[in-house]
Image (cartoon, rainbow, N blue to C red; front, top):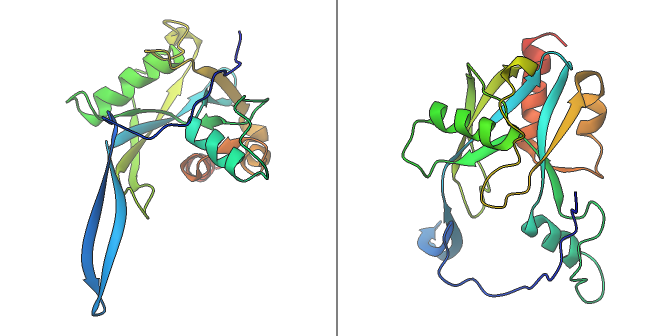
Length: 201
């Protein structure tokens, strides 16, 4: 699979589809404050445990904002070519709550679309708020056990998501959590810790 990302352009956002920038003004301790924010859809995510492999199934995909922040931290002009792992993230299977369906229906659909597994049952873990300084959207996290008998397709997502599947053996998961060469969100680390605690692993 050709994973190269080419012809990168940085442009101002016009007619946004998924995020809406706005500003809030308020008084804090008697002083006026202006705060820049972004309105985004709520979402769902799923920690997937593959029983036959004794491994977590994650999704790996290119995240432009992560790539941009990595590039911006470097000295000199932006390198407008993606190299190696830069910009690729390891994530829980997840999706936006933008179809008018329940959280459970949405997460089961996302599991099928992104990983190719038909999860027969999902367990709700909890909900959290993300990007607290400027976003605050809610994400509800679920857990599902899967196995090879549930495989119904190749996964990979829809609409050009180009998602890769990444298995992390449970025995290697703690090392993976602290491997900073693999970009990941705090929610994934929380999900792993939840699993270790619930199943005494």
